[in-house]
Length: 439
Ligand SMILES: Cc1cc2nc3c(=O)[nH]c(=O)nc-3n(C[C@H](O)[C@H](O)[C@H](O)COP(=O)(O)OP(=O)(O)OC[C@H]3O[C@@H](n4cnc5c(N)ncnc54)[C@H](O)[C@@H]3O)c2cc1C
Image (cartoon, rainbow, N blue to C red; front, side, top):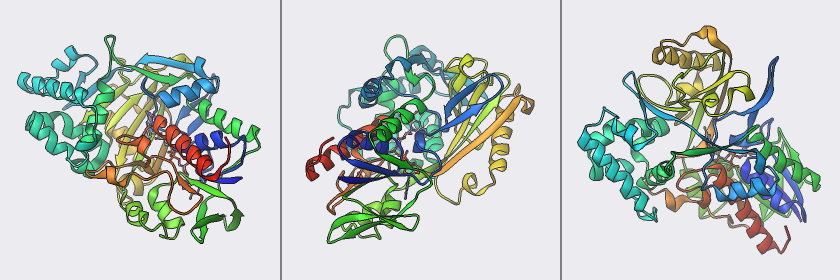
């Protein structure tokens, strides 16, 4: 059976990997590189050559499908579990946020508010099913359970930096999912997972398996139409050419799927148009010296700067792996009108560097070795109140059309590499079952 997969992110590659042994798999990727949101830069300088994700990535111990896949591909020895120190920068001061004792010293909150925050976290940890919280706004739920001060001084800036103008519409289900995963730290604190050499190894291993089994991955190929006749998939149009196939798995953003099916997916049409995605403008900066001398990996920010977090990768992974300091400066944005999308690349970088100068008096532009900016408009669904009803099924309706990606149930209520691997596998399994083909 000939199967076309739209997109070479983890969902597309995982589906292709499952299907490639018994089927003809053809993956079309519109970008020049494979990997989608988990794609990497290849950096070379006089001392080192290495891969580093265009967007910061780490994983959690609960990412079972992803970890099983890493093992299956023989990459387990690359897995590292490391401490990634967190802090919250509020009004010019850094507050470490790694242990309960440190959180108790978060002075923007009173002792009473800290107690309310602690109770909220405990309550969240006891919640097994987030479904009932999907219809409730996170803001309202925090105000009701922990009060105004906890909301305004703790959660609101974090939610603003994650969802911008949409922050107040985000569901309590998203917040609960997020807090659950971040508060599951064990006694020795939170350990985050990373593949030494980068997640590029995973992307390359999947691509290698697909091509070794006769599959093909073609980059710079945008699918502009999925041809459907008599409610069954016939093929796709790619760079103007018709490619016939028996089935299609689409991992593209829902509005793109709506457009390339000509709005013909019946009941799904409105849903596809109503799933809002947000963009990310993420700078990666190579530095001659450390930015956060206190060893922080992840710094959330409440300050008047055009980004929401600073992530010092080389305070997480050993500096020796790279031979230079690597810092991400990043912000989500909500639509194409955002200056982070409309401004020239160098202007976004300049605004980020100015922000760093304001936050870190010791930072000097002289230490900047190089900068890169990766910005995309399609980086995450916004988990608004009522989002659960919009989670897309793995089968889209017409015979032979399957869906997997950040919009799938495995990526609710927060998208992740694990969720996309799982979505890729689930779509492939459904395809095999319905079409009577093998893996
Ligand atoms: C800033 C950021 C940080 C993240 N950090 C983490 C993290 O720390 N841990 C974690 O687990 N996850 C993280 N994620 C999430 C993770 O990267 C994603 O959930 C996952 O990689 C998505 O994979 P996907 O295949 O579902 O989608 P994508 O990676 O978006 O793949 C879809 C692909 O389809 C292609 N495409 C779209 N339309 C077409 C078309 N018409 N024709 C051809 N190709 C098309 C796109 O170019 C893209 O390559 C992060 C994401 C971002 C943006």
